[in-house]
Image (cartoon, rainbow, N blue to C red):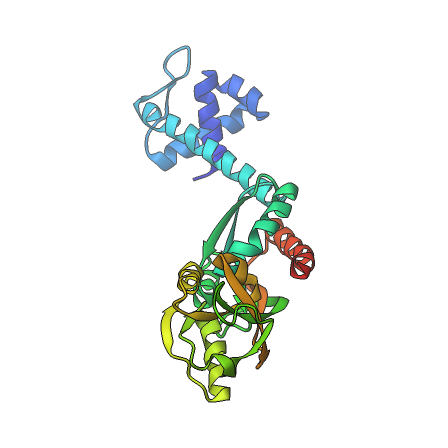
Length: 295
């Protein structure tokens, strides 16, 4: 349905005259009449009663014109919203993130981003690597933080930083005062496999390379759960350095052999239009990460 036809009919109803409607729209009276006539043919009913001195809506007009006016208002709002989005001044930016990144890096990024784009709403969704990849592929996330290379994800991934894993133990654990430790030394310690599938794979491969298999106390992808088990003295755990502050009152020890690392990157789908907000967000992330990693 032609919006020019809708605007002409709505303006005729408001002005009560084809002549005044034409003046308001900057058109000729003939053009307004043609727009209204085309709309009436489309609807199959007259919209105005032309038999009276003042043009008034017919029964069909009463049923249609208020809705047409609301539809035009919605279209105008939508146009303004898109224009705002393209200027980076509005809209919603959907960020998919690993739990550790969401809890530690994202608050700093969000603070810097909102200072530049206060009208853009940030929507954060947390999950594991597979979740982030799925949300990006489905189009329910605009940008995502991932660990390493993600198979089958058609996206551009920019590495941001690489970090070591640390061993975390109860504050009163006999190992708590150690500054460095080899994984061989925890071969008999009850172990909490923590983090997402990617982190668990890194831990499992490290143990396999040393031909050791610590007794499993718990497996959890939730860092809060892992921290609870460590704080209770039930288990020790290997977690990325970024995650340690999320675990509460635990002791963190550097691992000397082997050195376990993960790389965090930011991903955007290749075949999707990048709004100015997405571009600006990535720029803020790149500016924030170096200072964050130093700390």
